[in-house]
Structures are given as C-alpha cells and as structure tokens.
Length: 330
Image (cartoon, rainbow, N blue to C red; front, side, top):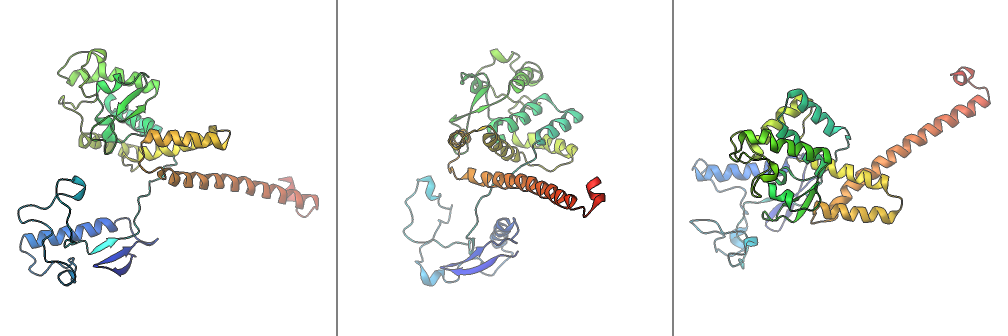
C-alpha cells in the first residue's frame, strides 16, 4: 500500500506516503476484525499476530480488560485509569495521519443536484433538505434532527437553532436558510408533511417537539431513508457525491465570497472569524486547508492572465519587426 514501516516501542509505526491509498486505516481495521473474529469462532488456533510479541516481557501481567466485558474508555470517566499499559492488538499504528477536508470547487454543484431532483420528480421534503445542506453547511444529521421548536427559538425568521457534533443534542449553534428555502419549508409543512403526520395542523400550530421532516410512515426521517433517495438523485445527475460534501462546498464558497467581497485584510480576518464561529469548529486551523485551495486558485487566475499578457506582448514584438506578417493579420 506504499506505506513506510518503522519499529517503535511495542508496535510498528505506519507512515503514509504520497502514494499511500486512502484505505490504509480501513485495511488495518479489517485485518484486526478478521483475526478477532476467527479466534472467537475458534477458526484460528494460533496466537493473534497483531499482539505485541514483547508484551509479556516488557509490561505487567495484569489484564487490560475483564472477562465478562471490556473496560469503558478513559474519556467516559466511569472507571479508574489503568496504571499500566494494557495489551493491544493495534500492532500497526498510523503515525502521520491527519484529517484533510475535501475541497469542492464546482460552483454550480447545487443547481445540478436540484435539476436532477426536479427531473426525477423528487419529494418536496428532499428538495428542502438538500437546499438546507448547501445553504447552511450543516451536517445532514443535524438537519434531520431539526424540530419545529428549533425554528421558533431564533428571532430571525431565516434561522434555526441546531445541534453540533459532540453537543449531546444541545442546540449550541444556529443555521441560516434563504427566503426561497423558507417558503419551500413552510409549503412542505402545510402540504406534503400533513399527508403523513398524525397531527393534521399547519406549520404555525405544530407543537415545538415535532420533527420538521417525516417519513411516509409518519416517523422521523432517518439518514438511511434520506440516503436511499439521495443516491437515486445523484445517479440521475450522473455524479458521485456523499451528502457530507455539501458541507465542504459551502465552506469553499463562503471563503471565496469573503475574499471577493472584502476590501481590506482586517475585513477578511473578521469575516473568517465569523465563519469559524458559525461552523463551530473546535480547531480554527481547519479553515487553513480551504484557504490553501483558494490561494492556489487565485494563483491559477493570475498565471492565466500573465500568460495572456505574454502572448499579446510576443505578438506585438514580432509584428513591429515584420517577422510574421500572417500572424499579425490574424
């Protein structure tokens, strides 16, 4: 898989290279799961090859987990931390792996999805959700968890309170939608949604706890149900696109707008801080990856203009010296 392996204390360090595939972590998880399963089913009688061979010599014989159930993770805070290193089957560990967001620079991407949905005759519910994804930058799970009360919590009619990853269902951020999407949302709540809801009232009279989006069975709309419809729509569009990529598209587009609509460096920095706060990123450096892409794009534009200037000056140079009359005429 084009990785480099270096021996470390008690395990092998796997260093990713420029040629390493994106599935290295998945491969390591798969072989760990394979040996665990084969040993549990008594199909593999040898020792687990992923266990540190020097473990018994280098550390205590105390078990790392109990016979009836494994320990809770340290982050749970429900058990006393171990004072020794427990035996692990993570013999191969990726050392230099880091998360890098995907950059989506196709500015017409949402409209291609909308057009494919219209052609296919999608439900109004899925159109509203898809517009939420591209307009707000929220995760699809955060959108599907929205309730009627989340809309009423905000003073601005185009905003909704929302959860964030790791917020334990607490509404710690807000998302913004366009006036057009708001009209579609209310239209959905007053028409299509009512066909499947047990509460036959319009949007303004719905209880706060009611989920915004329902399945055809009248239950909260789940990710698996949405993904099934989403897959059909993007297939119709002739593209491959995970719903989460709409979030990357949103950030890329917002950053582009920040640079194009700001007049000073101070304005750029202020708007970037606003974007970081809106996205509720734990690490502000996440934005730097998107900025790197935008810097590259700006250089491409500069380079193209420079090449055009070079060609024009070259033509003028030779024309003034009558080296190529035909070229000058063209």
